[in-house]
Amino acid sequence: MIEVSDDPARIDLDAVHAFLSRSYWSPGIAREKVARAIAHSMCFGVYDDGAQVGFARVVTDRSSFAYLADVYVLESHRGRGLARQLLGAITTHPELQGLRRWLLATRDAHELYRPFGFGPPAAPDRLMEWRPG
Image (cartoon, rainbow, N blue to C red):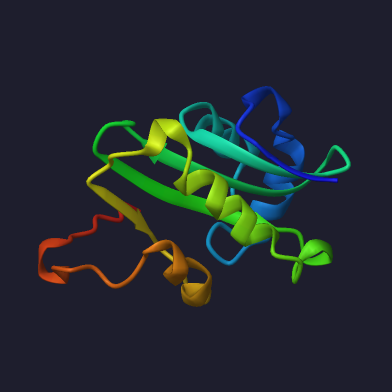
């Protein structure tokens, strides 16, 4: 049975770290950094018969802004609509309603996010980035 949960006690830190440390967006990331990110984010797990097979976190003030990050479904579970189910749970979560802006960064999953309302920034000239070494 597939389930999406926002219960932080169910997040398998070792499983999340194992995936993120080999992902294109955070190769080699330290376990401590993943633990701190999870502790300070609203996290969602995807579970198949109790085993964690997906994850996403939302960095948010729960009032006006959210940044969607670290979204994944294990390769062995892809193609079953689990990422869409995960995003549906996130975007309809009661604590994330009424926000003025959501952001995310993706290299290759634009078509996954588009049906949920994500698209290019309305004013890209207003967005800036700082990447301190």
